[in-house]
Length: 240
Image (tube, rainbow, N blue to C red):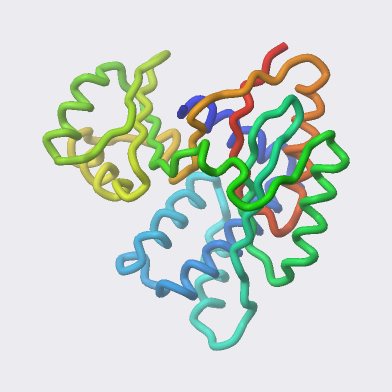
């Protein structure tokens, strides 16, 4: 759910070194999306979403601008999407999305993260069927019924909605992302999203406890240290 998604996000930018990794990942993804779909955010909605999220994660403006300027030029690097799936510590399920200019290097780097952390790399489709491609919004509020009614009146397909500790989480098919954001922005003046993204949300959670908790955290850190890794999705529910 949204809470789990936020927990995953919070594990990213702990140090200055980690922040530079985040900047680099955003820069690469913005470049690829702008190169393939156009450099105008008004005409390239995926680029607009990326830029909004980059700003929210405090990526410097010059990083964003440099990536877009680079996409305007001819030639440049050619990146391909590479996805890896498998089982992490404690048997949890993991999806790793990468952007790479060398699939052999990326495969070897990701495989090493698995082998060094008691994890098992699977084949294509090994776990993806256990995740849903979802738009995720988290924002302050406590009346999820009113939000659900408003979204339904806007003819939006909502997968789930919940309210907890003063925060509302909305999950919907990824194709509904821009319709939901527009509807929420118009219906809730001054709304600020804690989470505003497209994610792979697990259908079930796997409890990870004991020594596997530290092992899992090391596994995530190793993946996030890989230059080519863009996003990591998992279904781990960490215990004591």
